[in-house]
Amino acid sequence: MPELEMASKSHNIATEDEMVKLGQVMAASLSKPCVMTLSGDLGTGKSVLARAIIRALGHEGAVKSPTYTLVETYTTTGWRIAHLDLYRLNDPEELHYLAFDDIVANCDLIIVEWPDRADGLLPKINLAVTIDYLEQGRLVNIVS
View 1 (cartoon, rainbow, N blue to C red):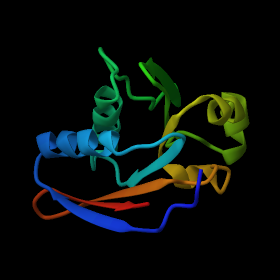
View 2 (tube, rainbow, N blue to C red; view 1 turned 45 degrees about the horizontal axis):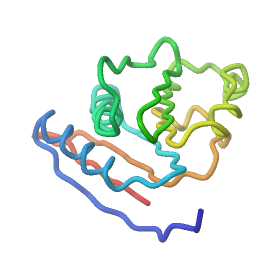
View 3 (cartoon, rainbow, N blue to C red; view 1 turned 135 degrees about the horizontal axis):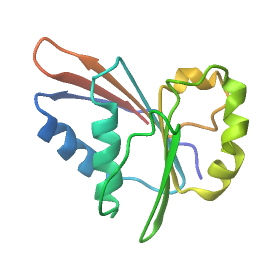
View 4 (tube, rainbow, N blue to C red; view 1 turned 90 degrees about the vertical axis):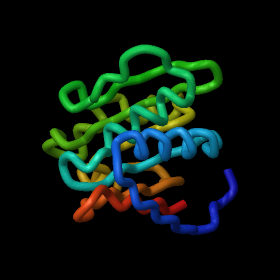
């Protein structure tokens, strides 16, 4: 994959519905392979955004939060997706126990919540998303 030009876009998101719409727009612009990180405090909407992207890529049914399982995978028409939540990771080396190398080799899209817990073990990041609280809503910053 060619190097992406670093670009940054910010979005003011007032509601959960707007977060879902942003996820749908993001999904439509993804190319394979893609590693996406989602950073932000608890409750900012990282899982809402991930769920919206996964559904927009064709997954029907529940999209479970990987908070306790650490990883959930989905296969849709044309996409193999891994959604990781590293919040409960005690040591970055635990990624090896999750067969992370296999996930990287076999998935078209890898969405990683709490990427700082991986401490440099993630492959090249294509999209880095940061979600911050605003007085009203959220500020979503996307760097590609």
